[in-house]
Image (cartoon, rainbow, N blue to C red):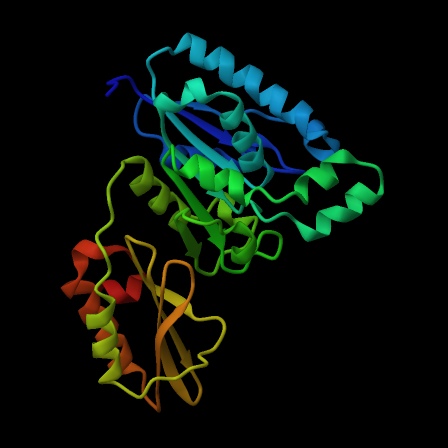
Length: 293
């Protein structure tokens, strides 16, 4: 294993610029990390994809030549992740140096709305609509690969991000643009690049505690605020409403495991969440401020 500081490549997406991911790069980068944020400029608007891949390849190739022993950390947002999928397939000789590939809101299943660009004769539109799920699955068999999808992302919703046998975490209360600067994304990314295997969330024990507070409910409100984010991506959500409060346990991919509604006062639910935070502290990655008490 190399002792050299990593090279962190962070690639922005379509109609975007490098500075939009600068904060995330700072959050992810340990001391002495070499952060590279290629700016595609006007190329990112009208493509073609080959031109974008060639530009990032030139930047990456020059950097790797200067840092021949540095491990590689790769982050791609949206189109930036598509570019890196293309590059990694083109350069398998880079694979031994890759310690992680973090794809944020990358539409592996294609962006349906991109087809209108293709109807205008722009090849980038057709390329963004292409299905790359099989490619991601092949790469994930060779490299550490993690997909993050925004729960409220309408450009690349979780169903369009997911790929067979590739780990996926649905980031709560986050849309496509917010993935670029989300503190939850930064926490998950730090853990991923540190190659820390997250402990499994004790979902059965948590569901049992919630069951003691009320009967299961099949249809909780769509937007519950995250109260606890566990290291494996499981979330405990909470909402206080006029006629009662809700708590729900969701898997990393956003599937409902348990939901309970309590009539009247929300204190019992809040106290339960605070107790769970303390009891399972080693499995919790983030907690809402009120849940830390």
